[in-house]
Length: 402
Image 1 (spheres, rainbow, N blue to C red):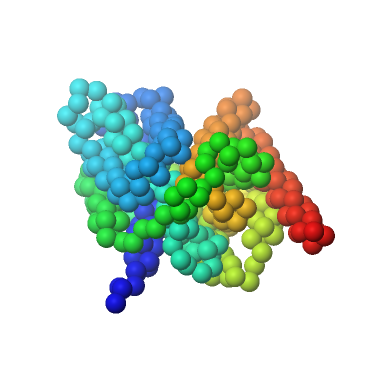
Image 2: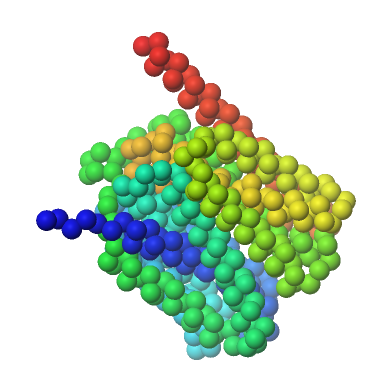
């Protein structure tokens, strides 16, 4: 008798994979001022840390279009956890043993960024390949674990620093490194299927010649931009708009945003079978644009905070929703499609926050000016979804006449 495969183990491993990515993306920024005081690293150099992190992720996304299928999902995803764990652990070791502490920090960041990039490319197709019903809901719930991971890292780290002091940050770094180390064994043992059978995927060249694929890329760029802009500027915006301390800014801004984003993904995961994904994304796009406008144009600080928090609710479904829509419209896209989608999302997440910072600087440090310009991305997302709906209606009409 053949033993039935336990795909719940796969799902749990993928949940923890996204928690690992949240640790990689959100822990180091909490230590920026500690790096400055402990190692004498200038703020100009510290600003390079997130840039190196996201640039490394982008390069991994691009490279994965070529090697992920050849090497195999299991080998790559196990490597993602090992690299994440080693990178986090080395962040507590290398700055003290290398002549230039900043180089030690960057080596650690590059290692766990490679792990994070692999996580981003692989987890969605691994779950998509599992025989689950209600794939949209499963995908949305999966991506909610990045949000809960972000909330956990911010709250957990803030609590640890309050109780034990920031000077003990290295101990906490080792504790966070245990999460991907434990998850390595989950990925070694869980069942993993191929997304598309050998020889049946479209191939990169054919994929790049498919017009609807480029529409999916546009949706992902706008999703990544809409999410990351508010995520990265929420804390600073809350501090400057309301005039609270950094701790309160982190909790009321970044943490509240991540919580609302997680709730949105959980809610859609629960009710997705009764909802039309494209319509939900349209509503969320309009809501997101409204939140950006409220945050950037409101003269009342409390309205700015509400716009910031509710933006998390609006962007929650965008990234996983775009992935699900892409799977529905390009079912033979294979791993290459997921890698390109991750690349597009990261591109939006890299360009838009930088654009906001540049425009805010030119406006004399006024973040509201930068956030107002970022309204462009949810508006373009809405336009893209309207085009997609029109294309689908045309195809249904065409099939009805044939």
